Image (cartoon, rainbow, N blue to C red; front, side):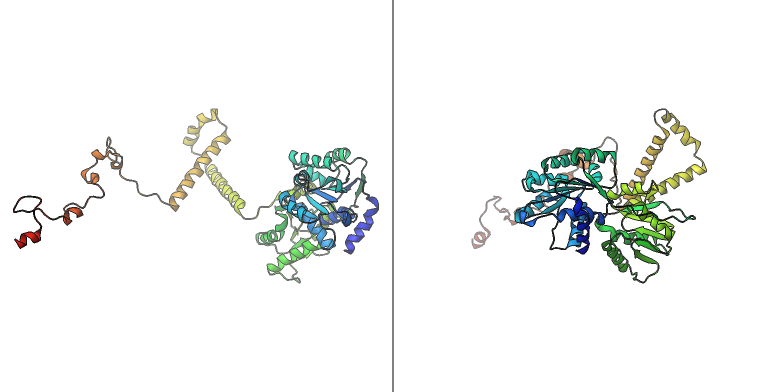
Length: 453
């Protein structure tokens, strides 16, 4: 709570209700508190209505904003309700007052159309991070412009990672004469002269699955020593708990969780539990002289990480379905390399030569590879579930027995299923009395009458 009040006092003097602001901040939880704390400090619970609207790129960012404010200010302060679904949020709006919300432009516009989000009550609309929102596509941009058109009386706060021509154009249209704010860039430490940072590899993860991804990554790499770099206290606690689950203790010297500079410790591997957002944060780990650097990044963080790494970025695919598919493809390529190194028989070359007039050589190789994969798949399927033995085909000109008409089938096949077996009379015939053999008539007297006479 003290941290929240300190940030609010530092920036409240620059933010009034009608003042438009443009922040240049990295996408971190600290940045969320930096721009959102002064906005929430001006919320008047007695006035009622939704007074703060935060537009985000996706629902995950809205959840992060809500969790960050709840962690910093506690449940008794102003909460930011994440709008992950307009339908579900509508029930909350009808049940109690909602003072601040965060969600995508599409979901927030749906609330405005449903008259659940009253435009006249909104005092501030914040766009976090506007450069990410503008990259979401035409539908998102149209929804954002419509939302800004509805909330014309609200002060506008725009947050971006850096100033770009697209951002400046958007600011000129929707936040003219806005005050520019930001935080001073930390001085980047000097990289050791005899060392160069390796290519950064990244693992794409969901924001809420970093701990499980860290466990899989450690199993995959099995580094002799590692430093897990966490940006905030919550991430450091989560990473430490993941290590504790794997059996590492806090006093373990091989694998540690750190915040900030690694100090004098050297490490084989550095793992960014959250991707770096500033050059200083990236260069700070050079003191440890790691052999490999890996970052756990959400899909929306990869573009910024690639720009920060100046192109020295490569994906790292953990062992799974995609990795197994790549391994199979590499095995096929190795098989082709072996055949080519031994020399391709001239007969195959001559047989394919006429097709070169119609198709490219790469297309012919791909078609041959497709046939090979299909044949192998059929062979594997036959080994798993062998087909039943085929029936012998009848002589030429003769149709199979099941396809012949009834009158053409053998006598054994024309017998009705209900008929008794051969050599036995029907049941009804066995119950009927035999005719009177003496009189020769079929309707003789009953047996007891004949005996009586």
